[in-house]
Length: 307
Image (cartoon, rainbow, N blue to C red; front, side, top):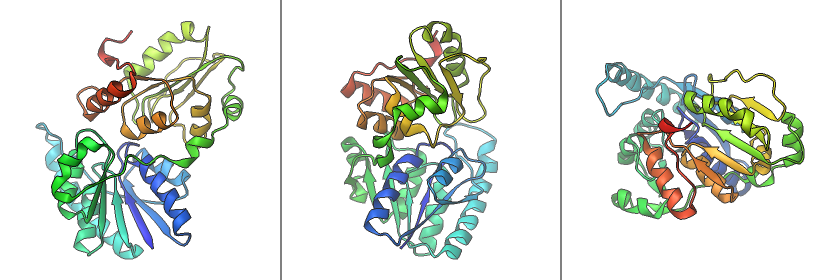
């Protein structure tokens, strides 16, 4: 069994698929895995850290508004289709599994053209364009939320919930304190803006440090390429992406300030972590945040008016 996962552009599609891989490893010890993602995508580091071979292809993003990039990206999607066909043919792939992300579209269509079965997993409250474009070639579909069953009724979807990586349950808080040089005996706030990060949220965190560090440690994941200058402050640790140590940081964190990617939200829910949700405004994250807030009571804050 040779399974190719696909998805990227952000870390959203990555964590549930890594969870699926861990489960398959136990059930099929001889299974082999590979990943097709975006050129220069934030997902590459996380995928490689999970021990999976990563191959990038050219791809584009179809925006739901007028942009000249839609014309050039349409060409990149076509090129990505042939890139994916070449990779899948060479790798002897048995099945392709996608959890969304624009890079997945040429991959799943290439798989269909080669007669390779495709499974599509829908995480978010509102189906994204990538999954809608992937549905016509899907052999099977699963959804994280019961409310999503109606959106994919023609595909006979399975309601599975969202897979969670087993490693997040075995983090060591003391290891996080040692790795990030934090102070013992104080609560810890984790702030994560996801793989792409948020310039505004990052600056708000830095501006808040004089008050926060009086009462807590702060671990700050800024997103790739969005590090900020905060100086060398006791109890504050910053990283663009936290991968290897994330289970340890999650075990240590007393409260998490987070974006509203479904992969992150479901892992935090599985750990029963108190949340403050700051969704990326004007995206699917608004709907994810609202859904989680309704069932958990987690406050949802509008980034544009934060101080």
